[in-house]
Amino acid sequence: MNYKKTLIIAEAGVNHNGEIKNAFALIDAAANAGADLVKFQSFKAINLVTQDASKAEYQKKTTDSSESQFEMIKRLELSYEDHVKLENHCNKKEIGFFSTGFDIDSIDMLMEFKLSHIKIPSGEINNLPYLRHIAGKKKPVIMSTGMANMEEIRDALRALVDAGLDKRDLCILHCNTQYPTPMEDVNLKAMLTIKEQFDVEVGYSDHTMGIEIPIAAVALGAKVIEKHITLDRNMIGPDHSSSLEPVEFKDMVKSIRNIEKSLGDGIKRPSASEIKNIPIIRKSIVASMPIKKGDRLSSMNIAIKRPGTGLSPMKWDDLLGLPAKKDFKIDDLIEL
Image 1 (cartoon, one colour):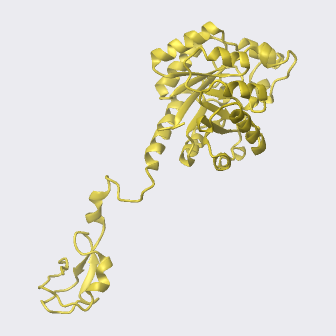
Image 2: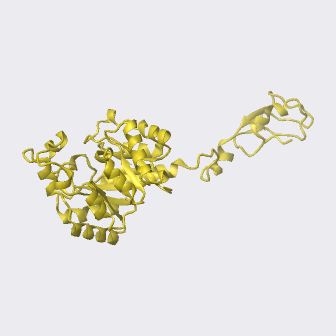
Image 3: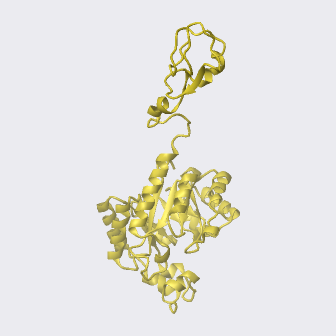
C-alpha cells in the first residue's frame, strides 16, 4: 500500500449504542474532525460469542454488569439496512465508510459495500479460517495485533500470504487491547520491531487516554492511526470512557497533519522560510581597526561580526598574513 499521508481512522465502533442517530452523529463528528475513514463494527452475536461468555473487566465497569457478553453484543448489532444507511451518510459527508467484520458472514456482507480495506481485529489474529477467507478477497488488509506476540503475528502473516494476500497490501497495527491502555504498557517501539521483522507497512491502533501517543506513532513512521471517537465519554457503553470526544479528535488530526509536514524529506538544508535569516544571523570577517592598503591581516586587526554578507569566518586562516588590497575602516567587510 502506498500511503501518501497517514490514514486516520475514526473508530466509531459500537459507540452508537445501537442507535442509528448516534451512528450518524459519529460520522458527522469524524468528518468534521478531518478523519479519512469512520469505522464501525459488523457482527452477528450468534456467530461471535457463546451465550454464557463473560465480559472483559473494563466492559463490566462501563455496562450493566448483570448482562452477558452475548446480550451486550446483541444490543449493538447493526443490520444490513443500517450499513446501507451509514454508507450513504458517509458519502454525503465525504468521508470513507469502513467497518470491521468479526466473522466470516459479516466479511462477506461487507464486500457488498465500497470498502477500501478489510480490517482484522486483534481478537481474530489466530483465527485461521477467518484469515484465509479474508486473504481470498484480494483487498488491502489492516491487521491489529493486540495481545499477540511476534510468533503469532508471523503465523497470521504466513496464513494470509499463503492464502493469496500480497504482503505489500498489508499494514500491521501495533495495539494494546486494554481500555484504557496504561502508558507503561504502550510499548510503542514494538511497532518499529514489527516493521523491521516483517518488512511491512505499520501503524498504531490506540486505546490510551489523550492524543499524544498516536502523534508520537506518526513521528515514528505509522502509516495508519486508529482511534475511538465518541459523542460523550460519559455515555453508557463498553468503549466510550477511553474514546476521544469530537473536539479532541479534531485536535489529534490537526496535530498529526502538522507532524507529517514537519517530518520533511530528511535532507538537511536551509528551509525556504529561513534562507532570509542567513545574512542576518551569520557573521563575516570585518576590520576591527583601521587598516591601510598593504597592511598584513592578523588577529589584531580583523574580527568576526554580523552581518553574514561578507567573507565567511571559515576563511579566517586563509586571510592571516595576506596584505590588505585596500584601506578598511572599522567594521568594514574584508574583501580579497
